[in-house]
Structures are given as C-alpha cells and as structure tokens.
Length: 127
Image (cartoon, rainbow, N blue to C red; front, side, top):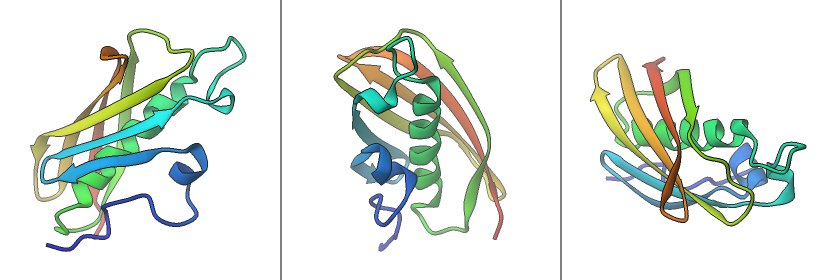
C-alpha cells in the first residue's frame, strides 16, 4: 500500500509549527511536537489551538491513509485536562468509527506520559 499521507511534506501548517510524524499505519497515528515559545498563549501555557491542530491533523491523516476517498474534518471537540509549559507533546489517534461517508477519531495528547488533552474529530468524505 502506498499513501501520500505518511508525513507532513511540503509548505504547510504542521511543518511551520514543527509537528513531526512518528508512526502511521492502519487505525493508528502518532506524532510529536517540541514546545517552543511561539506555541504558547500570553500566560505561558501551550495554546489550546495547538492541541486541536495536532489532533485534527493526525486524525485526518489516519482517515486518509487507506486511500478510500478524501476525508476532511467537519467537527473538532477538544477537552483540556492539564496545562503544558515546555517539553514534548505526544499525540496518538485511533478511530472510533470508520464508515463509508464519515469517520470519527479520538486523539489523546500526552506530556511526560500524563494525559493533557483529548479530542474527538469527525471527518466527512468529500470525494
């Protein structure tokens, strides 16, 4: 199987942020981000939009990895459980439901092996 959804190639948001793919396979995606000052909000904590971005990206890559159509995010619900000031964030996504016209994925985001955010991302098939 050959998929173009194996890394964050090109000029895109993920490369700009420093988001790195660690592993992708059927029903599993793992990525990381080394926290820099530009990832933080004015209070010195990682911005909530970063968590949502990481989650939506790897859920989208997971949904498109098998080349069964083009899936895009249509809903992203992220709950923040604990704050992060520095270090490395690990994001792991797995599907909850894979259908023909939509998919629902869950991403769990960790800092020092502690769960700090959970996202559910719904994706719809557009072609």
